[in-house]
Structure formats: C-alpha cells, structure tokens
Image (tube, rainbow, N blue to C red; front, side, top):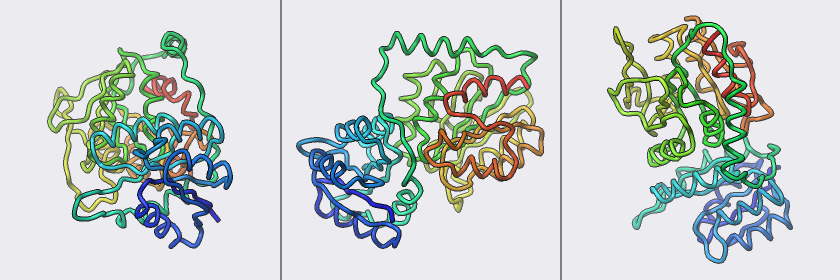
Length: 352
C-alpha cells in the first residue's frame, strides 16, 4: 500500500486529491495538511511514501517545505501546479529543488477541473513510490560549480571525425533536472544540434527553455516552426505540439505541428525519433532519459534500423525507469549511462 500525505491550503483541494487517490486500492492517504509547516509535521510523524504539495500556502509555502523535506527526509514529492507563467516558474524551481514531478490543475472562476488529473495522479503516485532519492545538497558557489563543469568538459576528448550532428532527446517524469544536468555539461562549441521532446504542458515549455538557456553554455530555445536547425542550439518542443525535422538539400528545418492530434503524448518522443530516423538516419544519436511508459521505443527502433545510435539513462539515476527500460529491454540501447556521465557519453557518441 502506498502511503500519501496531501498538503494544500484549500480544503476542497485536499478532499478532491484524497478522493481521487483512494479510488485506487493500492493507495491510502494517511494525512492531510493546510500549509507547509503542518505538512512537515505530518511527513515527520507519518513517514509517507509520497507527498503531494501545493505551492502557494500561508505560514510556509510549498517550495520552503519541499526544501526541508529533501534535506531532512528525502522522498518523492509531486507538486500541484497551476497552468500559469508564475505557476510554471515556481514548479520548475520545485523540480530543481528535488520534486519528482508535478500535476497541473486547471483553475477558473467557473469550475475547478481537477477531476481530469485523476488517472495521471494515481499513475504517477504508484510509479514514484519507493524510489530512493538523494538528500538535497547545498548548492556549490558559482565559481566552484564552473570549475567542476570545466573539469568535466576537459575529459571530453573525442577521437576520429564527426559522424553524427543531430541529437534527439526523449524524456518525461523527472525530466527537467535530468535535461539540465545533460545540457549544462555540454560546451558552447558543441558540434551538433539538439531536439528535446519533454512531456510537459504548453505553459511550461517556454519558461523551461528560458531557464535552461540561462544556465547552459549552449543556446536553448523553444522550437519555432520553420526555423533553421543549427549546431550548438537545443530546441525544446512546445507543449501540446510535436517536434520533427525536415531535411533539405543543404540544411535542416525545424517542424512544429499538432498532427497527429490523436497521439497519446504531445510532444511525442516516437514522432520526434521517427522523423529524425527518416530525415538523417545514421547521422543521429537518440538519448532516452527518465520517464514513465515506453514513448520513444518505436522511434528509436526506426532510427537504429537506419544506422543511428541510442543511449539510455541508467535505472539507478532515473526518477522513473520506464522509457529507458523500454529501449534497454528491446535491445536498442548501445550504452546505458548514469545521468552524471550522459553529457560526456553524448559527445563521445557523435564520433562513433
């Protein structure tokens, strides 16, 4: 049985989340709290497997409570986030602090569309329960962080000629910190372009790309339809849209489209990988990071058939070992790599 503590300042929200979770016979809500301060007491006393955490609360907000949880008693935390620019910024900060994922809530004066998240909420709680998380480490000073990154980059000494110039990354639950770890380890003169399909709502992908651009040497941006694909740039698929490429005679264009509308995920990793397979084949390197399900498996299969290569994040370093496991089990991964070593593996993979 998965034990959950629900922290939210709205009595209605606490009851709604508890009701949705307990419709699953494998989940029980062992306690609720109306602010971060009370939430910390409940987590200490009840030792839940998972915590759901609102962000805006009186006395102690969700980010402060999350920071305490990750430093004192690390465990999976799901943030309950509004789909606004401010909600996106706060949620991305929470993921940086150690939250595993988030559940978006649709708020309006007329209705509270929270019931739509029921299945997703139950699935995520079951998937993340029991994952061992590392305690939140004090942030290194900028100078020390820069020095560590520089040491990491100097280890990247590729040999041979450049064989691949397109990197396609597929990622879902637990993805934002993993993507940041990978991109921040790559140099500004990275010789390939990068395409990223992260399962994320449309309100989040712009702030996500902007945050990455501020902490990485690479240029990072939300992808725009028809723009030219260039080395040293990472393109994040807009939420609710698919990301593909269009190989021209002398260059590659970025394609952003709603089709196929019936796809389970938008953006779809399978759509991205299939497009890259068809467009550049052996010139591509696929990277599958943390996430639930198997989105990306068939696209990577198509890429491998065209001579491309694939890297999968290791079970030990994933928040949820679903998407990488799918390509490992299908024997499509050329290497299985810890997230801390993934940027180095990507550089090496371009020259193989």
